[in-house]
Length: 482
Image (cartoon, rainbow, N blue to C red; front, side, top):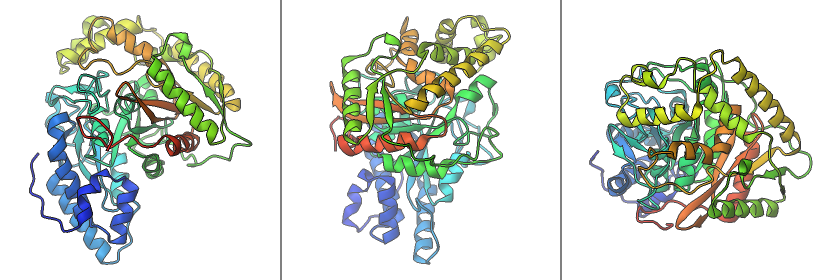
């Protein structure tokens, strides 16, 4: 991953890795700094920090520097430039980037070169952003801790003994440590919001159909349950960058039949927006630090003029269980896992065995599962007529000790702790993760859940919280804010 960077002459370049994506775009556009200097600053940060955390797995240094030089020439020539012109970004290792394999962290896919960029990568490139490299994930994105067959474990920069989360764990760590100002991840079982909580960054899990999801690496499409639960989404350190990425990434494409032409902003809400505060989803317990973070967020929203009250949407447990049913298609027997996933390493198979054990026997018709989902979507929709935003925990426990996620009973416990997050995926709703405080030496984060296609409400509320609680990253791997 080494590279040769040229010596820069701008004094501020040593601090460029601390800046957000929009800040960098403004600095490049104004001529304060070149795109090459920005890319080089992040490459140096990767060289300095990545050995301690193992988050960035593939560095596209030559391609990124060439793209930066082209960006600088375009700006010098007076060309019209895009919103993120010359700004680098990183990409989770299961998202297609032309020129490097989409490995999913698996040895079996080391030669899986995509024929074209994923739509999310394509759209960032279209506004001038520069792909810097791939980040780590658990093999085949199967686990809630980032440890891949190809690259090994990623380290939580706040506390090396704790998980960085998964499956977008490498992306969260890259952002938290200043190796990237903007990232791309995805979410089926909380894979954007859970690592955002563990690492103190922001993430958007969009409405199903808002941001396209497509790959050219086989198998390109999963069963219907996976299609309904999985979304692509941006990650960042700042809500303003998250909002910009949301606006850039959204919209129709033939490559994803689920995408819909929904407006980026919905109608203004009459009067103060009412927020349902869920301190303990379904009454199954919540850590004191997590509860404290929720109260900090609630106070920030009240200060911003939101009407916050304790209330809960209906049947949270049933919604979380519905996601397990959706991802448990008929014919998935524990004894057949090695046949269904022939190239999965032992840890992936252990996770799947534990997951399917919790999910239980699959419904042979699956009709009941999707009828239940429809009923729950209506019930939550009715609740959100009066409480359009729901403020809730992402995970009700602190990040578990690294590597303990496959111990006896831990998969079942994590499913219980992520119950609110899983419910959101089952119902296809949008949610934003935002950090709010540091407790017990770890970042504490919350999620704001909105009605379908009302990401704007979630982002606005997250921005109000960030304005009052501050930004926790970037940090050095030894811990502490920058």
